[in-house]
Length: 320
Image (cartoon, rainbow, N blue to C red):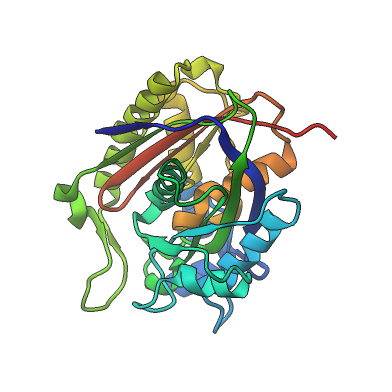
């Protein structure tokens, strides 16, 4: 495993999310897949998800989320890092389109592909580039239009996924706040477990293998990041987990022994939105029950690759 310590003076100063269109209910998904509504509710736990409109791209959603994150941010981005597996085009990076639409000409822009772990990888990449002197105020986005990668008639995958984008603006925070540590992991030997064939086709997943890796590696990367930050699990005020599905989120929460009020569940409203899951959940959790100054928050995700990552941060709430 690779563990990195991050300068704690870099923290989140802006949050934003974009969930396109009206919620798509289980009735609609059930009709296209032939799945009983009870099966979706009982086996998966998802009640709704959002689908991008025809012609609506990953960069559209990413730009919208970024503008929300920048609305109250006290800094101007000087770097754009976008986590996605559904880039607008193979070349150039989708982050370049977002950079242009935000009027950030000259700011470096790049994409990161680590599937559902992508946002954690992107956040770690951005923080490392700050340490390297490349930037001071990175904008980090997770965005995916994943429903276009899923066979709409496949009962195993179509009910699971949605589209969306989330963004965080990073900037200076007082010493002792901000990103305290990160942990990243990958095992390419399991790359076949969740994949979209290069020759085209729909997303394919071995659900049992994915669940096993989530329950094995999620706690491992989380505990490693906590150890590096000098923080105990029971000190966490919120654990933001990749919302693969509500059943798996709760299973992971139970596995590490944290109550439901510490582990927010928004997947029942959004479905699995891949790289957007962590920043969207973070944004919605702060909106519904605002983080307090000094709160300890951890982010943890496991995705295709197989990849996994965790971040520990201390929230800073500026005084009025």
